[in-house]
Length: 229
Figure (tube, rainbow, N blue to C red):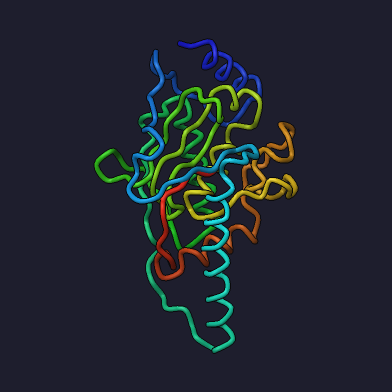
């Protein structure tokens, strides 16, 4: 077990979190090289990163379009059709140290949104995959924001920042939300912007409403893959 993982497990125990991390493999599971996803791809990081502004802008543009459509439909008196929630299957087999945290993060989102549900699957049916290891960029999401792609969870970052918040934040990107680093700790998508003392792992009512709007009647827009943090 690497020194980074040992530190992470010890730190998590010291914080007395509600979950116990599973022992990870001797070597971390490598995430795919960025760019392995079809179409244009990009990523989002837990901490501010100049390289990922384009992806954040794409997510924000899609969200703005969804909110504008919802507002126009409301003004026109259109009622949203009743459809079953979209199910996004995730696979966390390649992030065993974070297994319990990933499941907790999925449960948090499922308790706050109604148009999409996160359900644990496997490599044969999952559109969203979690990986763990060490990366200079820290933790990040890579994908199109439509429930596809992968989330990489960084050991060193999890030693400094609240790991459950990291997981739920990155999962928020997979559900379509952009980074908002300058917002307060009460906003989940502010990520690492408020600093290590911020441990809030919950989306607020506005963030939950935005996800529901994005996933109304399925996902309202198609897009391209990109990395977000």
